[in-house]
Image 1 (cartoon, rainbow, N blue to C red):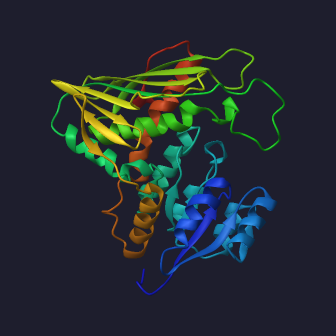
Image 2 (cartoon, helix red, strand yellow):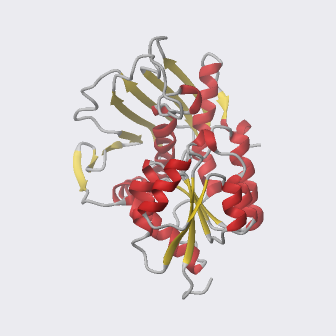
Length: 336
């Protein structure tokens, strides 16, 4: 597109993340306009449009795509709400920013991926931490090393006990993906892949989910990686004290280990080798995507829709494993 023309953005999903992160980021950039917003909740859509002075408001995303000219679609709806909107947009030549997790059903994600590939549009998935310097430094430190095991852990809780769920609320509904292992599990899987350069080939998972709780008290995912290494992702929602002083990631390699402590520091064999400075990865990713759309140059993007499938599939495979009493699932079987 011409460098003098504004990048026209459509927002699909006007929840907290759209209002608090993506739209405020986008409107900071020169020569960018929010052309339309869409949400199944008419009140949410109208309030967002009024807040950011957006003229075109929709409750039907297909109608938005048909009636308003946009260059890029930000798909920020929950994973359970994904259908064929992104596929339709891609086939219309509209570039795609897909928040993670991309879908609850791998077949839907694969159909979107096919549309993106056929149209050649620019795409990315909201794995924003790839842009954070601490993860880039971890990737550099691990380059050329033989990875043996990765451990990720996240501790919080406890979750709410069973109670009537408000209509429209999905954040604590297991069947709608409102669980920690799905949301942050896709993140942890992606950053495991990004830091090590390895993919996940097999997944097995178990849940501790007493009937009186809306979501599991613990979720344990076990991976086999493409070089023969192993990995575990553990989510504990029973301890309000949290993680304490332990690392989010511990990555063992032949000869040593690195630990990544949140967004704060990296230790190599228990010595601090990197201390992070404040950084906004959401802003960095939004800027990179919009500039890619404007220039047609996608080299600055650190992921595309197809790559994102390799971070989504292991978690969906693990979730299927929990339904099969811990059966080991071939991740590749989901991507056909």
